[in-house]
Image (tube, rainbow, N blue to C red; front, side, top):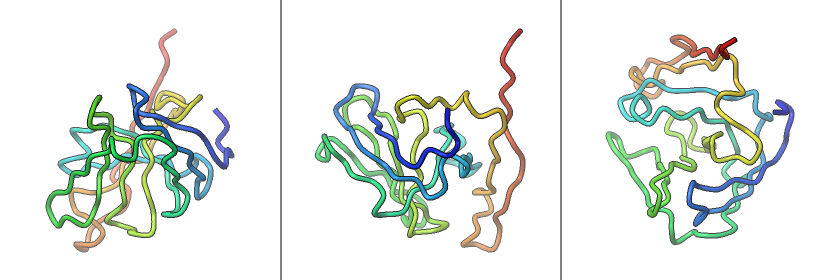
Amino acid sequence: MDPDMRQADGACHCGAVRFQVQFSDGLRTARRCDCSFCRMRGAVAVSAPLDGLIITQGQDDLTLYRFGTKSARHYFCRHCGIYTHHRRRSNPSQLGINVACLEGVSPFDFARVPVMDGHNHPRDGGGGVVGALTYLPAG
């Protein structure tokens, strides 16, 4: 994994949805969130500008999920259910891209991932880093 990578190709699990993405700051923006939805989803996301994502295949195979304030827009493949990206509530000019969908990148490539306070969302007067998840390979 190259933390300085500027762009990548990605896809959902079944391959119905394919995309190209240009990142805001390589893979250095990797993070998790502890809001009710992200706790269950469990994805590591990296940042991209709104115009940094091009769906190259399967635009009609994406489905949208919104909850709470309905500000964030979470996109999933309607066939395999994999979350590919979302438009952030904390910064509506950014997308969060699921690193597990990126070619050559795995969530387990990140030794330490900051966890953001989505339970007390920045738009509601909370926010910030509340912890970190770490991955330590066996052996």
